[in-house]
Each structure stands twice: as structure tokens, then as C-alpha cells.
Amino acid sequence: MSASEHKAPLTAAPSGPLTGTIRVPGDKSISHRAVMLGALAVGTTRIEGLLEGEDVLRTAAAFRAMGAGVDRDASGIWQVRGVGVGGLSEPVDVLDMGNSGTAARLLLGVLTGAEFTAFLTGDGSLRKRPMGRVTEPLGQMGAVFTTRSGKRLPLAITGRGEPLAIDYRLPVASAQVKSAVLLAGLAARGATIVREGRKPSRDHTERMLRHFGGDVVVEDGDGERVIHLRGQVELAAPADPLVVPADPSSAAFPLVAALLVEGSAVSCPGVGLNPTRAGLFDCLIEMGAALSIENRREEGGEPVGDLSARSSRLIGITVPAERAPSMIDEYPVLAVAAAYAKGTTRFEGVEELRVKESDRLAAVAAGLQANGVTVRMGADWLEIDGCDGPPPGGGVVETHFDHRIAMGFLVMGLAAKKPVTVDDGTAIATSFPVFRALMAEIGADIGEGKTV
Image 1 (cartoon, rainbow, N blue to C red):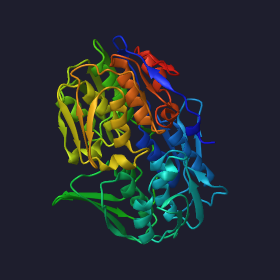
Image 2: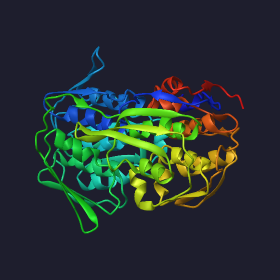
Image 3: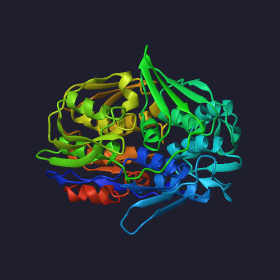
Image 4: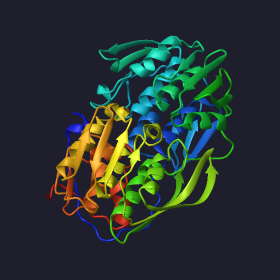
């Protein structure tokens, strides 16, 4: 029986002021890539601040099953003993990627450069998600796939060993597709090229490849971004520990909670501020949020800073389509903020939300309606009529085993007029296993069971 069949309802009750400083876990996207590139490098990569959520642990288990050493020492530092590009060995069992689309899609890129067949599966949610967007370019590079209908997991991939270098234009902005092609290109002879349009996706892979000594050149101009990767270049473990920034997607929840609960002031140090991930913070500031960023610096090739939020009166805005790639995971919590704002907030160009862990667009709309908020929805847009203060609340939200839906609506309950319940909080462990504990540190009341 899958984890999603063991539902554990959680309820957030209206809270007093939220105050304090908390360090949220490491960035999930960067954690996946740190393990993967550490396994493909020569030498031992030491990683500080790795997210120890279920998604990243699935990535660690997969590479351990293929011959890399991936272990956590007593001090909390992870050590990845790499086998080099092309050095992975055939796993003896199916690789179960749990709920992680990032892990599954990026791993397919790595396996394109392998000389064996591997089998991948995932939980009920992941098995519904499309893989065709990565199997199509990886097939051009020489990988052979056998999949279920709709290009879904479980699937089998037979790598080419030395993939064909391709020049690929992304049909939609997707960091996962781009990263899969680049990871396959590590084993290819010659240059692999990926072209993005005017809405570039997050660039963690390019940054981290450089950190490991990869030959990556990025060109911007003429309305597109072009990434050139020279293949068959040996990656080397960094001499210093790789520090994973705090995840901005996780920091979003306590920061937005502080904006909404009267009298609150919360700080989150060391948060990743990659410009391809900062769209939420731009939106909140446009809405009038008292959100400050101090001590900007760089760690492990990524920009970071210390964020602080104070309770604020928000106003509705229009979020343009070109901002979507920089905040695709943050729309659920921004929708909650919009429910408290004065006026209407409109999200444009958000069709990608329909193929995340759930149909997030529909799930967000249903959750808001269940708590007394008026919404209108189209194929790629959502409008939210703000309540100019706390919404009614009192609803039960169906999460569809989506961690961001669960956490977003628990934030809503902290400042709504009545408690808000999510039908299942188990998915939270995939990205933010200490969510409830950290929220309790700043004064949030999130309890088990249904109380509404």
C-alpha cells in the first residue's frame, strides 16, 4: 500500500503573533543535483545542509544502488564517493523514485550515458506524471525506452553509453528537461546544446556543473538563452564542502505566514536567492509585503541572503506568464496570500501547474473555495478575489498527496477566521520533514486530526 493511502489529516488553527528566527532545510533542487554530480565526479564530495527529505533520500538510494558511496556522517555532513562519468554499475533491483519527478527525470538523463538497462518506478502520484517530455530528447541521444501508455512510469531505459550530442530547443521552459539533456551530454562526444526561450528555467544544473569543473558556456541574447556543454570532461569533487542554501520554496511558508498573521516578525537566514527562483519574493514585494533581504552573498556557486518578514496589508496584483518558471512551486502559497489581499490577484501562463505532483491549479482553486474565497479558473490562468483580511476558513482541503498544497493551506489556517484542515499531511515529508516542528518554534498551532 502506498504512503498516499495512509492519510494523516492536519489542522492549523488561528494563531497569535509568529516570531523568531528559523533555518529551513536545504534546497531540494540543489540537493538532488549535489548527490547526482557528486556520484558522477572523481573523488569524494562533502555536502553540508543537504535536504534529508524523502525525495532526496530516494536519489541517494538510487545512486548507492548503482555503485556510488552516499553516506551521512555523525556530524550531519554527507559524503558522496563518485565513480566518474560512465562509471555507474547496473542496479540489481528496480529504482523507486517515490514522489520525486525531479529525481526520476534527471536520473533518466544520467542513465542515457550508461551501458546497461535500468527500471524506474514511483508512487501512485509519480506514476501518473508525464515522462515523454524527457524521453523524447533522450531518445534522440540514443536511449531506448519501454514505458506504459502515456510515457509514464514504470519504465525501462537502456542507455547508449556514449550518447549522441544534440542541439535541442525546449518546447516549454523546464529545468528538469534541460537538466536531463545536459546530464546525458556529460557522456557524449562533442557539444550538447540546449536552447531556452525568453522564459529561462532555473539554472542550478549549469551552476553546479561549473562548480564540479564541467565545461559549460551560457549565451544570452536575441530572445533566447543557449547552454553549451562539452561532453566527456572529467568532473572533480570540490575541495571544500558544498553548502546547500536553505530552500526558498520551503522558506516561503513561514515567511508568508508572518505576513498574514497580525503582529508577526519571522526571519530565515541563508535562503537561496537564485534569480530563476526568486519570483515569489518579487510578487510579495509588489503586493506590499514588508519583506527584507540582507547579507547577500554566494555559497557553492549560488546567491543567498537572509530574509525577514513582518505582518503586512497586501494588495492584489497580476502575475505575468513570464514570471511562472521562477516560481512554479510557490503558486499555492502565493494563492493563500492573495486570499488575504485587497482586490483581485490574477495568475497568467500557469498551465505547468496542471502536471505537477497534482493538478495544482485545480487543487488550489478547490481549496480556496472550500474556505470561502471566490476564484475563477481557466486552462492556464487563475483569478482570486481577496478578502481584504482573513478569509472565512473552516474548510477541509483535499491535498492529492501534494506537499505544497498541504503546507500552503496550513498557512492559511494560521490567519483565517476558522481553522483549516488538510486531508493528508504525509506528503510534507517529501520536501520539508521538519515543517511542523519549525512552525511550532515560531508559535504556529498545527495539530493532528480534523477539528473543523
